[in-house]
Length: 208
Image 1 (cartoon, helix red, strand yellow):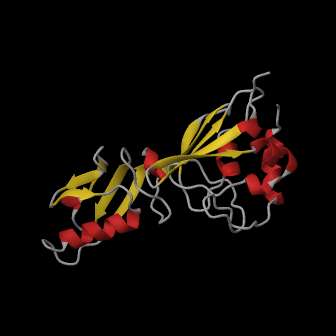
Image 2 (cartoon, helix red, strand yellow):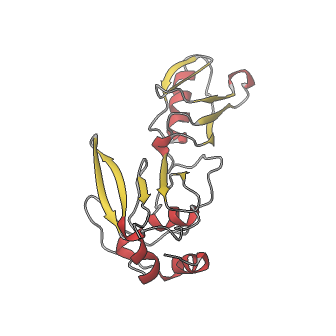
Image 3 (spheres, helix red, strand yellow):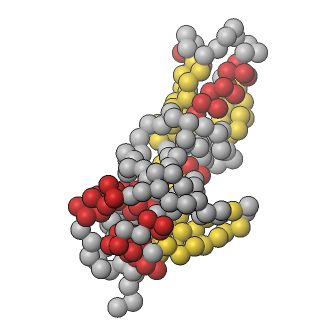
C-alpha cells in the first residue's frame, strides 16, 4: 500500500478529540508531530538508562559535568553518589541533586538537560515496514500518527491494518492491534492512540 507523505501531513489538520479508553488512552486534542530527538529539559520526558545528562551547578563548575545514566539507572557526580535517575524528569532529578548538595554547599542551584535521549525507557519506537524505523524521545501527548510521520510513513510493502502496539503494563507485555491504514486513509482517529514511554509500534509486511 502506498501512502503520500503530503497526505499524511495534511491529515494532522483533520483531527478532533475522541473519548478516552481505560488501557489505551485516546483523550484530548491531537498533537502535531514533535521535533526529532534533541536536548531535553522539559517535564514530560522521563530519563532512561543510556541517556546522556548535562548537569550544571550554578557557580560551581567543578560540580558541573556531562555524564551517562548507567545501566543500573543511577548516576554519580562529585558529592552525589549513586543517585537514581531513571524514571525521573530532568526537573525532578535537578531537585534531588540540589537536596543532596545542600548538605555541602549553601543554596545550590542545579539544572539538568538530557543531551542525548537514548534510553528506551523514555522513548517510543516504531519498527517494521516504515521508511525510517527508529526510537523517538517520548513527549506528553505523543500519538501513533506522530511517530509514524516521524518515521517517514509506511512503506509500499506494509500491511498497516495489521499493525500492533506493544506496551508493558505492571510488568506484563500487552499487545493491541491498531489499524494504521484506516487512520491514514480513512481518518479513523480512534486508531490514533495516545502513547506511553516504552511503547513499541510494529508495522508488519504484507503477505501479498
